[in-house]
Image: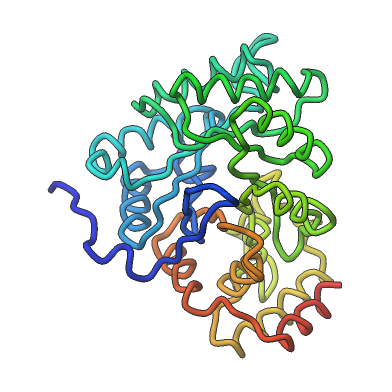
Length: 329
């Protein structure tokens, strides 16, 4: 059966202008970091992407190394795009990145022009695209001159292989310098993608101010702290959870009793708001309109429903914010 998108897909999603650009992003975006590689069930991935778009999520975020194995998330996404979503290509924001190890040898990592151009060419081929909407440098390179990395991003836009460029994981000082270089080249930075959640707040020190001062938007990854800010761990660490697995991204020693107690107290506030903890955690990252979008992962459509449902209740009273701050400090 040929996929036809829901005619009501734009009714319940909020779209926010990204920095000082002309582009608007949904406040909830879908990341394909996990659950879309060769280790995942292809039809479930198709179901997730369809469901997300049917509920107004127009932005799908990938990277060259997403899988596992690296490249497989882009391959599977490309197949779903060609079979289901191609008629809606102009309604979609598709992003990819390069900056982590992708292939052997000295040209398969970091931030050289050689690596970034080659990597995007490979990504476009895997996805069957002529261009991506956003191309990010995935992490700062301590050795390659920043001027070379930014010149590569500028070249990629001028080649028509990306419409906009962004940065990810850059600290405020290095991001500011990158913004200046890109502006001088004539390809301003659209967006920055940092890790940001109730339990990961480094961006508040200076990065968010730097983005605002330079007219750059932001999209927060891992806004649920790897699943900690959900109802998953309220009663402890389930045996089938990520923390109990061999995942290097969330380990049992990170889930101390002190942190779990904070999670339980936060959950009480969420319940008083008539929300799930995950919904409140997403709304909190979006508070004050300083963050353009939150980037979620999903393995079930119900997780997408929860995130989209947050949009209807994402404002906080001063008392709620103070209570949350009292728990987090």
